Image (cartoon, rainbow, N blue to C red; front, side, top):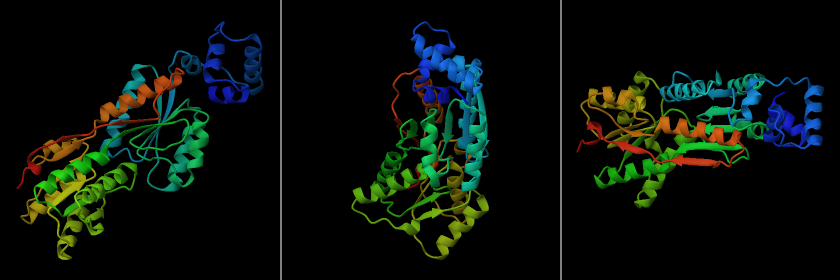
Length: 327
């Protein structure tokens, strides 16, 4: 049992419970007695975490990610852990993997740790049963980073990747690049937004998109190379490539250069890989550090009893390099 359970059972806000834990005089005697009685009945022992909540901070946050080997998620976890550590808070990390069972088990584990809030990266929750997230959000704040759900108590922090892709496609169309290949790995919220931007750009230009040029691939250079070759064998024409992350874009660039083909190639997340490539890779900067800082600021506000926006969206920035300047 945590502070949110106490608040729910007593029919009061977490701020009221926090005031009781901090011996604040601004609580009615009858309310104080009811809260203390429930604590005693349930064997609840106030700790530093709970007292910290009264000051608008917390000491234990559950963090769910899909795969820690993913550069985007690993960097996000590093930013979040650093922010929590500077505020003398603890992060309990669990990787879910890609299966529904793995997501359920990871979520169950996190909740068993008596966390005071849940922070989720990149759809690392069981989409088959969103009612579970709804139930959790009724008890504690749920912060989604790079994903979005319209559920009370859930706060989403995203980058406007749909607009970024639509604008990028517009640049390509103006350069007479009409058959754009889109590569992705995981069908998560971020990817779906990118694909929506892809179709939106075609519709705005009065052109017809072709689903044969939207391709799911493994994050493996050999697999990407094989997929590119297969497209060419099948005579699926494409004259530019956009990939959902930098590794996929670099795999495509390597495969195409190997057979002597040059075309504009763009990745996402503006990782260190983009600057290491030859030619240097153009990439869309999703401002991950800003996303993480905004997520933590939102969480601080919610725990302090302040109003926070349920969906904060940050604009992307195109970092143009050599791979985009090919005529």
